[in-house]
Amino acid sequence: MNLRIFVSRDAGAVAVGADEIALALEQAASKRGVGVDIVRTGSRGLYWLEPMIEVATSQGRVAFGPLTEADASAVLEAVMTDGPHPLRLGVTEQIPWLKRQTRLTFARCGVVDPRSVEDYRARQGFKGLERALELGSDAILADVTASGLRGRGGAGFPTGIKWKTVAQTSAEQKYIVCNADEGDSGTFADRMLMEGDPFVVIEGMTIAAIAVGAGKGYIYIRSEYPHAVAAMNAAIQAARRAGYLGARIGGSHHSFDLEVRVGAGAYVCGEETSLLESLEGRRGIVRAKPPLPAHKGLFGKPTVINNVLSFAAIPFILAGGAKAYAEFGMGRSRGTMPIQLAGNIRYGGLFETAFGVTLGELVDDIGGGTLTGRPVRAVQVGGPLGAYFPRALFDTPFDYEAFAARDGLIGHGGIVVFDDSVDMSRQARFAMEFCAIESCGKCTPCRIGSTRGVETIDKIRAGDRVAENIAVVEDLCNTMKFGSLCALGGFTPYPVMSALKHFREDFGPARPRLEAAE
Amino acid sequence: MLKLCRAEACQAAGGDALAARAEAKLGIGIGNTTVDNLTTLEPIYCLGLCATAPSAMLDGRIVGRLDEARIDALVAEAQR
Image (cartoon, rainbow over all chains, first blue to last red; front, top):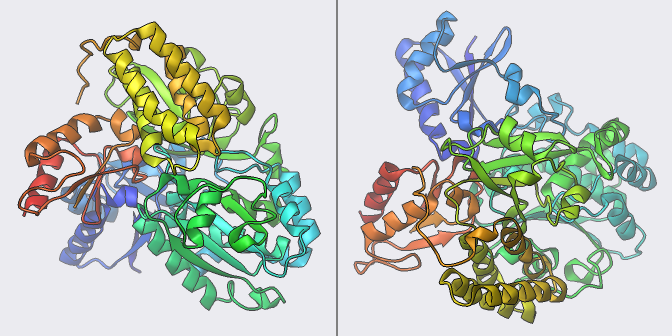
């Protein structure tokens, strides 16, 4: 029997050489006359160990990593002889970083071949859809509501209520839209899942379609994610061939089909109404709400628009897991959150766990502090529109309300770690600059406020009337927060104000900083 | 076309210094093209490779864990 070796095809692994490793392993095997099947999976999310490979053994999959091409031959030797190797990590499932997670949404990611419907089915795939077809709309909505699932894109709106609103409309045509415009820096969970387990997204969207009576769905993926686009397209074709998309799904009277649409690099298209504009073929400009997309969404029709992770949580919930899902978490934040640890961090990657874990545990304990070894000074939680937290707030539990109470947000679950060489006035300036670059321009506070913000922070950094100009920035932030149409202008004040509040000593004449360690 | 990720996660991982290095090597600022028309240097806001930062994309090929040697190699390749 051929040796089965699993090598990730996730973009994060490919970017550090996974393709070359796969080739080197094949060559090493053929040199020794050993038959190998190389299976390209998604990533397990242990990115500091990528490129990581796994080998099927009688004890389960055994991992090695991080590999270089030069290691391929010796690793193969160790596998064949069951001998030791310095990069041998043991049975993958027993790696503590993975073992202490609660993987519900990411249960299959890194395990299955993302192009194989059979692989997906063999690991509980389409169980949620099968049950949804038996249950019908009302019972699906009841399950989703009972799970306590809230929108994982950042806004945290209860998914059950959103779906119910669309279900109650009487339109002939309704749409399901998946927001895969994951533009926040420090987040990659959507990308990982689309590349590693695309069928779970398809299944979640199909269940939504059955619940609300929609016939057509779109997945809007950003152009920066070519690997995810390819993986989703391949999975849609495979699902169609297997009868999970198209007419009469699974032999039922429901018909639903999906299409991938690729964005064009605008961050604001992650905002749901500009995403809909873009899908309709227009420039990505925010729409005023109301009407809500649930009433008048894509092409003016009732539309469920959810994040990748929200849809991906659905199959577990519908496969009889609503109660189990709701039992995880704290307060009004139920279930698990795929948290993404990134930036200057020792153990960066995807950590799915129940809500309630503290920021300190995530950064120091799980993340292992900074990669540079210098002290952690600030962490930005929730992308470019998220607040910077100092160590003093590391007791904050990962929970929508707890973060809001401390003037922050969990957003899409990304955490970016900075060491003590960071200049926080520079980060505040970047937040304003990013907003100025990415603003759609429709509303004045965002369009002009951000540009004035950059100019004013520049004055502060130059030592020009520091106290007065800080007051101007605070006033600008206030106007942007309450006067902007969407979260881009409305949330840019979070990183700016948090930097000002917690790191005031960085705002003043620029002075020589510690050199960043390289 | 060399796109350098300039978002926060890559900034935190030393991306600023590497971007400056690429600019100096090419003799152009980000957003510009070299006079021989061989290389365009662009910012990109997030390739989603934030746990293997800093990252870049050269003509559609992604590269993570950039350091001085890797960015030099990318710049050299972009100039060919």
